[in-house]
Length: 223
Image (tube, rainbow, N blue to C red; front, side, top):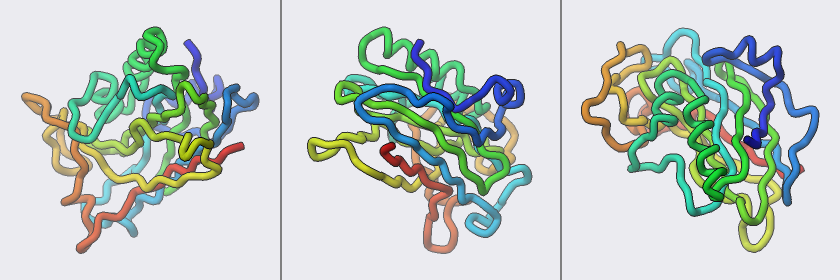
């Protein structure tokens, strides 16, 4: 399994669940283009005051680099077990396994595993490599506490107009994985039966006044 990770051994001992790591790779990954993605969490009582919970944090980043023959999640699609476990529990192992399955099938190249952010606001970097054969990035993190909510990108291409982008910033908004019926950050676990499609959260508690502000950004910078 090819894994690109910012997590050191000492960090792994600390990050059994949703916690924080702010280190970067000592050795850069290899590929046609190397990027550092910086996850900047802006979610706070000031940006999203409605129902803002205690202990606000984001789980470890997880995802993969791949081509357009595979997708690990989509707006309007059904959550896989890997997405469900990430969004409900902050666990990465099932999604790592799904990406590894795509690697074995020739549709993905790297498993990505990074740090989390605790508390939010905060930031954490992750180095990753992409190739012209596998130019797409999927990367997600649970917003916590929450029933089954997460942020991320799906199939984001860093190869645009026949070249690698130098820098790209993506605003991050809340998504509901569709696997738990909870309506608040601290709602008790209530499994959705049946599961429903992944959807953006555009009402309470994401909406502030007439706007739905982002909870953070991913900034991809070519190294």
